Length: 184
Picture 1 (cartoon, rainbow, N blue to C red):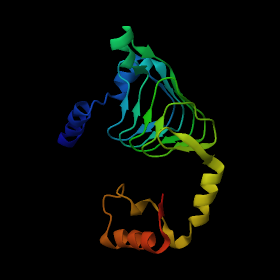
Picture 2: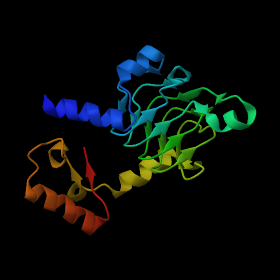
Picture 3: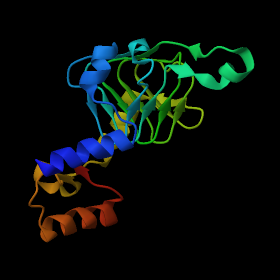
C-alpha cells in the first residue's frame, strides 16, 4: 500500500495526471493503452488528444496539444488536435507536438520530436522525426536477427520478480555474442 502511494506522489511531482482524471477532462484512448513512468499527456488540453488501441508510450513521452510560444507575442495560445492511431509505439523521451497525426502501425524512435504527420506502416526517428523505413521492413530486419540462442521468454525480465543471476548472465552473453537479445 505504501509503495502505491509513493508512486502516486512521484507521478504528481513529475507532472503526470492519472488516466482517469485525463479521461474525465476529455482525453480519448482505446483498448490496451499503456504508458510508462514520466509520461505527460497535456493536462490542460487533453480533450484535443485521441489515442487508438494497442498504443504504448515508453518512459518520459510528452504529448502536447497546445503551444504557448505565441501567447506573449500574439496574446493567444495556439491549440491543435493530436491523433495517434492503432498499434503505435512511441519511444522513450519522445515529444509529440500539437497538430500531429500518427497513423496505424507506427514505431517512433526514442528521443524523437514529432512535429509533422507520420503515415501508417512507418518507422520514424530523429529531431525532427522523419520516416526512415516501413514498419514491415523494420520488423523483417529485426526478425532476421532472432535466433533460439538470443530469444528469451518473459521469465527473463524484471516482470518476473525472481530474475536469477544465471538468467541475467544468459541475456548479457546473448547481447555480447549476437549484438542484442529479444525477450517476450
